Length: 257
Image (cartoon, rainbow, N blue to C red; front, side, top):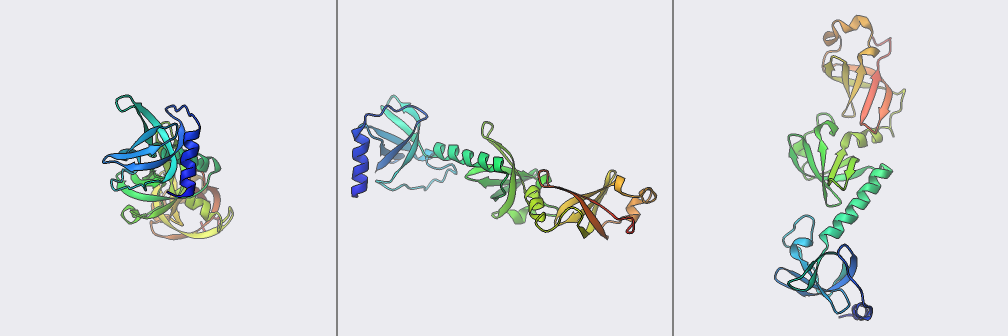
């Protein structure tokens, strides 16, 4: 054991701590047991860290080093063994949510790791917390299968620790990035990707961008599907960029119509 490690143990034993469930404490691992670790937490007390309380990701082969010094969360008191039950997983969870809520508050784009897909969207992981990107917040024509095991640029839409709910948007992050290149008033050529009752969607940097029917001359609305055939290219003018919702709105000049 190093000099620093010995000093640390001496300091722990010097003070008579009163431990409570929910406390965050420092301790030193001193024994690797079959199902967990024994930890010196001072006051001549050994805490117990079960293996299932090491990682949020339930990694079975996670190994900690003997004499390693780190922080632990006091999870419970085991009356039968007269030991405090410790957790690293719970401490990781608490601090991860603190960072996520701060990122949400500061509206910072992050990269989320894609772990899986389902009918509704993409399952991701951020700060070891599982999150979800709904299909409606993925970029247009994005292959979900190709996103697997890659990092996706995202914004946090919902970060609710109480409900363990983390919802993200790829579109919001992309629109914000687009704003570094194009501005309101910019004109860009874009392809028609969908025609609906309320307007036409164009593909702008893989964001479905709406040309509302109110922006289309009346004479073209009768045969709108013929006038704006899917796949045709039009010069469109950016009239609204909304990174908060991941939306772009466009218009077409009278000369183009």
